[in-house]
Length: 108
Image (cartoon, rainbow, N blue to C red; front, top):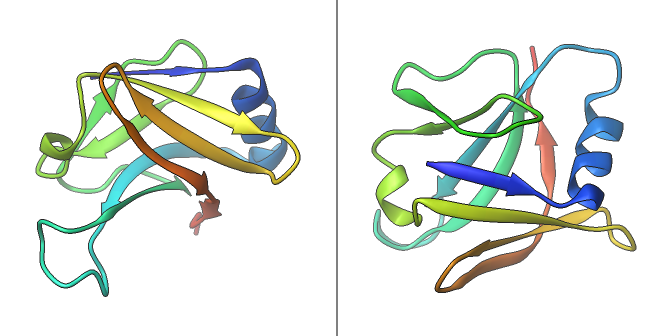
């Protein structure tokens, strides 16, 4: 899988990472969504990948995704930054996934 970043997305991520090490994780959050097939995309900064995570191709930051959640996304994604809100929009080649995605810092 590949995830491309717009310049605004790169800047928002850099600001949130600061000087502390961390990696990014794309998640398919199903908590309080009814069932495991209903969920919403999310982004987190983590200290290390999860036990079932696989790397995503990205030229700027290390991105990871749980291999079981990867089926909910297309092979090529684009993450756009929304500077006015400090949030992100996730798009695939054939669909829009979600806007107003917050980057949650879950580093230890």
